[in-house]
Image (tube, rainbow, N blue to C red; front, top):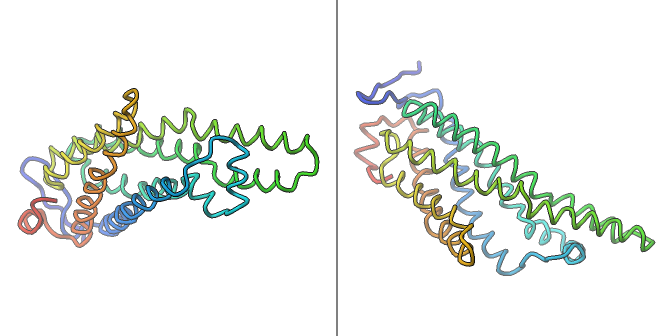
Length: 249
């Protein structure tokens, strides 16, 4: 039977929680996201995104998988993996501040949807195939125009909204961590640092440097810390046991 252990300051669910599998799935999701980060960085270096529709079409025709990966398909996967993580954060931290956790969860999920919209990789692949099969200049011009629309979407409002929300939601979650015994202060401060730096992407001229630093190393360290804690929660380890064996996570 599911049991609750109440912290004298903030009630939290610990051992034998009915949410054990959610925590385990969230832990696995965090580790997969961690692996995706360096892979995507390598892809950016090896295959920089083209700036024109014809460039994208050529890339897709030369290597469809490379085209999909360059169009940030792995980041779409990473965003999908964030869904169980947001749900697990909400379950674990809702008693720390249920209002903020509800806001953070909604912001996070909306950000995921926005990012899905902003990464139409398979649509661009389809247009590339249609362009290659076109038999007239009129048809090719039509598909090129549609490709430019995809690029505009790739760089447009949904893309920026997804990025900002993907930093804002974990930032709020990390602040709530400071009021909870579920995650350590080190994990909370690492989350705050990573996501505040991420939001500095919009600083003129040097923003991209902040964006890179926020991911490597800070976001990667945060992913390791939260994965470890999620697995502990998934095993039903009590709060006292977690503090004894993992005070830094």
